[in-house]
Length: 126
Image (tube, rainbow, N blue to C red; front, side, top):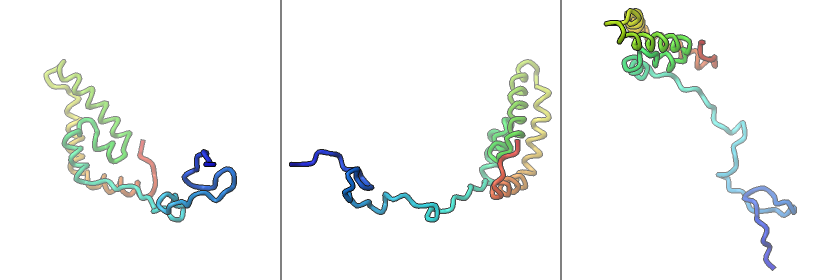
């Protein structure tokens, strides 16, 4: 007579018989065996690319985990571009572009500061 009960893939069956051998590649690594997970550092080139493409909407600030400043850029950028149709040029665009110009000069220091904060395990600034 053939036993029709399903055999578990690993571990011992409910009846206490030894069960199949567990392949080594399916065994989860314990806490001591898991590789150390380090946070990824921020890349200066990618930060500059985000500044050029999404600078008026704070894309580079969100990338650097400066979420409060990114939200400010986003709100200012959306309101500036929304009101630029009403006026010939929105007066909100001037301070926004000045902030982007300042970020062009100070972005390497901002990336270094963000990487130090990431490696220290601190959350983003809100």
